Length: 120
Length: 110
Image (cartoon, rainbow over all chains, first blue to last red; front, side):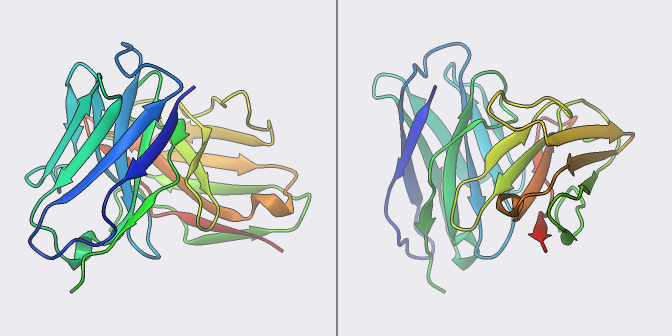
């Protein structure tokens, strides 16, 4: 069973790069079964999938964000990372890291979420 | 605009049953049996309630059930309880290896 915990700055300036880390415990992200991903939720709005990754490096990205997003995994540190460049106020959201033991397109394990604000 | 269409709100009284629909297209909901449903209480992370259209994680009550017909999936909650009041989101993966969510439905228990 996975436990996930995000960390990173709560405030990012426009045009800069948003960087978040998700620490994974309770399992091995180098296991062939684990997929991890990032989902965000703007204030008062619904969920938006950012992307998913398998530890082998296979990634799946939301086409609307793909040009600005990099998702990677460091199995030695048991960490998932998200980099979103050239941010604007529309990137203000709660960012969740999440995972599943079977497939990349659903999430049975979630972190509590971290608020990231980009001032306008 | 979300890729999957859900009603903005539904309501029901304790003990009643409600159904939330999730309408997509032949390239997402209609293409695979991979629809998932999540429950989200205010200020909390989403919680997986149903996956693969109608399967439930072992920890989830059998009051929650899912189904699909064509391009529309549905989540039914029977025996409504006060703690079921939350937002519900459907999701599906697509033929272009993308994951899409519905816009969310607010369930009010009257």
